[in-house]
Image 1 (spheres, helix red, strand yellow):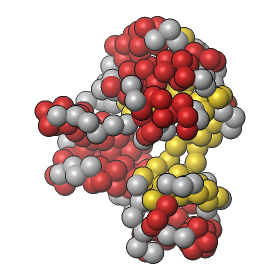
Image 2: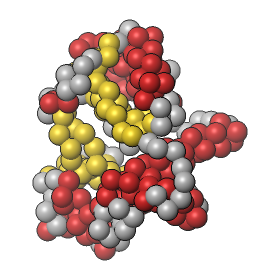
Image 3: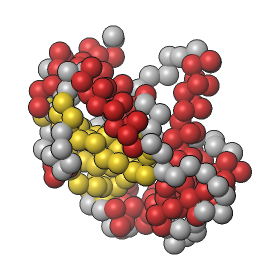
Image 4: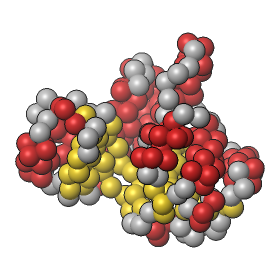
Length: 250
């Protein structure tokens, strides 16, 4: 998840959807492989792998594809040698951008990510230039009508969640990374269907954007997201409902 689902649309023809799914499965498979490589192939003992497999299953990735990805990570099957890299930089309006990639060719990916930043009028920075502004959190989103706020707070806080925020459309739960699976298990046990569940990098302070700046940041994030090696993109942008409504019309 890239932290900008409000910009997602599903107005695509079947061919475009199939191509997008293919890219999605490729990225998810690499995430499973990396998780198995860094923490072992047993999802019970490897929370990161468990999350990667859950996300792959949510996208209907075939079981044998997931198993092959795990075995590539543990070395049981031959495959590409992947590494994770975090690129950091600044977009228009001083917005901090973090881009997480999984690649088998560091030099190729570095050049391509740099070019995406430059084409968008953004600047790629040095390591750690913006990472200090973000912290990792578990984030769960579910429809507002799925459960009352009081009941949801009871379920979430019992499992160690930090906060529950509700709007007219959704509930959002946040927690520390080490409580992620306990919170998710409680939500699942309560029979609640989640729109999303992920570990995200959340900015401590956000920058409010006007329409023109929001448009430029959206283009940058969309371009990064389209790159085959990009696993996730995070920013500290804050876009009002009014600006979002205008962007949705474009």
